[in-house]
Image (cartoon, rainbow, N blue to C red):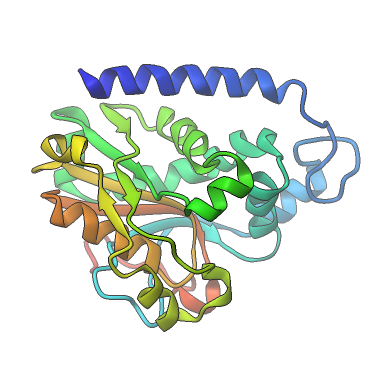
Length: 257
């Protein structure tokens, strides 16, 4: 019952966000000319960053415990700029296009796993946005990934519930200044499942969702916390992954590790 109340509350917040979109700037988030949230020209540039079909992100080096993660595009240039504008420049009107680009990765991640497919139509699939750091939450005043994920999940169908089950256990350094090894060390043991969610997670199938994948350290740490809490299977999805750290040049066959 708690999951259902949470889902209804989240749907209400998405509707409220839709209303807020109506009063946000109508300029393009990238070139700032009329025609928001993205003008036709900038939208084409962003869509050039998207793959013909979702692909598996393979960070190099791959952190231990990294879940299989499907992404829709390459997290560089225009696509990264759109995510940054959404999160840090208050362009919440970008939620809809970003959600539309996240949904295919979510759908493919679920479709690639027989266990996840059964959960989606049976017990239910738990979609877990990665928690923002306390520092980022203070700066932004919220966790902008949450409504984005809620919108993307709405296009997934089935019994999928977005739940903020993970919390930070300590303050971490700014990840943007760290290399792959430092990011993994910075996040090691930095997440835990909230105690009130432990019963629902035992034996559950979870999909961890982030906006962009760089080193994979965040997804690996979130997956560790979920597995230690008793999750039966943990998958991952994101909008994009960086080319220099992910295998974006080939589509791995279904079922590849």
